[in-house]
Amino acid sequence: MVKKAEEIRVREHRLRLSLRLKTQEEIYEFIHDGGLVSALGGNELPSFISAILGRPWKPLAKGFTGWNDWWSIKISGQSVARVSGAIERREDILTARIFRRTKTFVSKELWPTLDTIVKHHQDRAVKGRTFSDLELNLLETIETERSIRTDRLRKQLRLEGKVNNYRFHRALTNLESYALIIGAEDPHPERHLHANIWQTWNTRTNKGMGRAGLSYTDALGKLLEKTIDACVLAREDQVGKWFQWSTGMEAVKEGVLKEGLVVRAGSFLMTPRVIGK
Image (cartoon, rainbow, N blue to C red; front, top):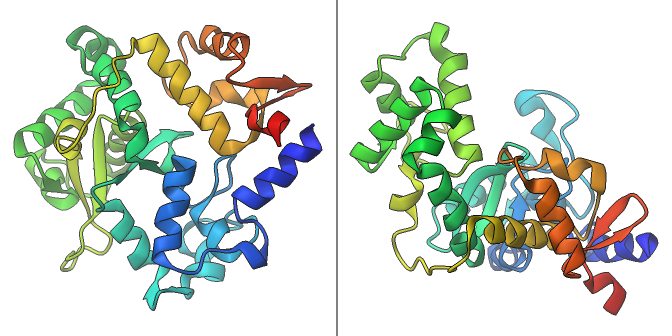
């Protein structure tokens, strides 16, 4: 069954040259089909970069050096970087770091489920024990401004200068990993190359947000089910490392297994679609 799942994964993740994505429309469809898609790769989710290359990809070097094998590729006449930025600004896709704290495209189909999880962490008591003072200040500032670029956010919080780089970006990443803030690349960055524009989850999703009507635990289960479905298969011992909200996830995992929404095969978890194909 694992071998069958791996074959399905190769096909659905477009990991053959003959299956690679060639147009922007194909990319949008790929993201909506997966629900969750890694912006780069190197993890269990379908990968935007791997799918346009038609082979598994993960960075072999730090920084931009590791991007050399795809940086020059054109999609519908545009660079991959420009296409990626356009995806981030779409009304039906957003970018967060909810999976392994890495940049992940999230289809609008999953927003109602994720909304329940975000609302849980927006609760005053939960926020107080989860986030640092700096993170709470960042969140409050972004909420007040509704939309603010990275450099202006740093200036407003008096966090300019290299000495504050680590603290500032770590705080942003932590908030992103809970989807409390959503970033999208500024299409007109002036001198600030690759500057993000930040919004809170509520601001970013206020148009067309449907309510899932789920409890927090049910939302965790739904997201886990959808994530494993996107991955097709994954090592069970890695699942606990996927999300920041690790508390209670073991019980959630056992719940989706019991309901047959996810199946176990040895040391792997996989989508039940494998059995039916």
